[in-house]
Image (cartoon, rainbow, N blue to C red; front, side, top):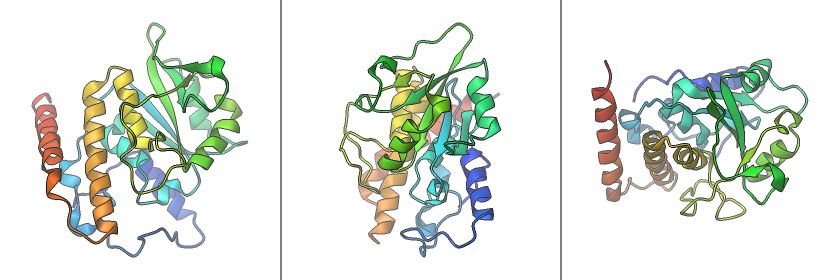
Length: 250
């Protein structure tokens, strides 16, 4: 168990808890969890968490209770890319001023990440094409699929941005919540795909490995069984990634 990482999602979670008028009762809320990785305390995975760098940025728009859920995977993005991940609670009519400033920052080129089947074909693209001097900022709508669809349809401040439609090679491995469609990935899986599309292969691989370890251990804790022996390749991959990253530090 390690200290809670100081990143955007954890700060938002702490603030959201501070304004709550009653305890948040999530499934599995009585389970003793590591406060950093939110896994069952005796199966803490913090020692394998990679912290990487990427040119791409992520802007998480989170539905009201999403930061509070131990199953939330948007937090995993901030775990891996703390320097280029921002998180805000979603509001239809009163978006946070810092959100609007980020979207207007000339250093970034925003893309709303959403499935191709949903809305306005003219806005859809499957590629990341950047203007000179700009870096991609991927806006992820973090909630259940009905909540994400609501955020997409009722956020006028996002209407001017292109919509990046991800076509994953594999179906979702996320078993913690059930999506309406098998092709709907969870937030961390989407981010890993987006990083690959943007050419950030190392960051995408690291996030996918971290998500896979988290999801396996989360489900094991939910079913009160031990983590599977077949997670060894994940631990090996994360260890190698952390070693390589450490070797590159000055």
